[in-house]
Image (cartoon, rainbow, N blue to C red; front, side):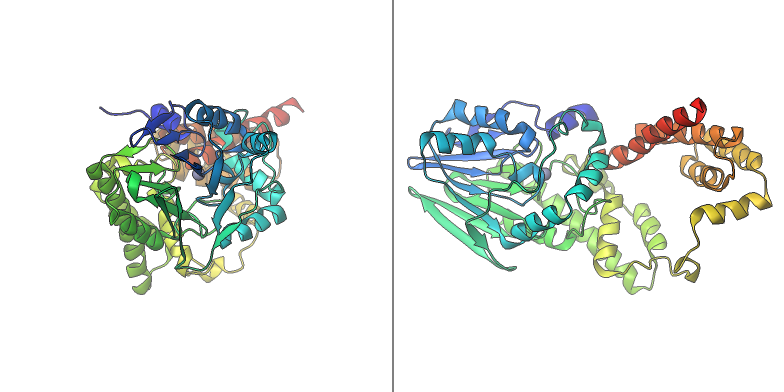
Length: 428
Ligand SMILES: [Zn+2]
């Protein structure tokens, strides 16, 4: 049965029931950032904390299943929604006088925490845009980068691997770059379970996030292939529902690997053909395979194919991406717009933008509206206010059509800001 975007999004943020699996020895606790718990006689292994704002809910869920102490904590990576929601767990450890668990992470996770401290306000700002539609739900309490539980067992370099046993249960931890450079994943042979962290997010991989640093499509594919070799029965994603059954797990991993190889290799081929970004991007849109478009594992709900093209290009290319020397040291965009308005008056541009809007050519309408909005000498001129109103309408229209959570938030957030600006302008 076809699912709608709201259902997908509710799953993605973890609004569904916790479950036990693998003979009731493991617990899957959905959250904004899923948590997976493995129970042994000696205690628990916990893979990922949720976002700090979801920590109490996750903690309570864990404690409905088991009251054993936590022995190991594994950070799939150091993002806010995977390594920060530890408060209630720490309180319990202190209260009961338990020993502090070992915390396992990749060395790049520590560098990430240091980077978060350096760029705290910046990350707060970009995350407010990326997660704008969740404002009020997960953004009430700011997550401070200063408060981290530091790892005690640290995987190093590119090939590192770590394993440990608790009771007779073996836990194998691997590092592969993918969404981040610090991502690690867990294989528990006895429970036939893989915890993938954000290497699997129940959406098209978040590779090429517009606000964030470089991500790694080829390494992502290699991680998926390493996971396929394990022949797992359970695949725990970083977000969304658990994938169950050997066949289903293999299918989810295979199609994701295939998509990552495809995007990487097709962009690389075009770089070698001497093409610039614009040409590569539009050619890639034309060849987006139907099987990826239609795969339930690659729904463009969070990340999207269009972002992934950027990610691959950026992996190998510098910032000069048009091949046009006009763009090397460009003039300010409002000065350029002003010159266009000297050639033809604002009203003409507005009329043309309206026609484009009515023809459904929303992106082109935006480009034309920007000439008026940026170039107009009078902030409050009637034509400029009309242009802002039409831009608001156009962005709202685009938001409705946009499946990617990140893209929709960027577009809609800009629309909201235009509305606020318009209120200010119209007031005075
Ligand atoms: Zn995540």
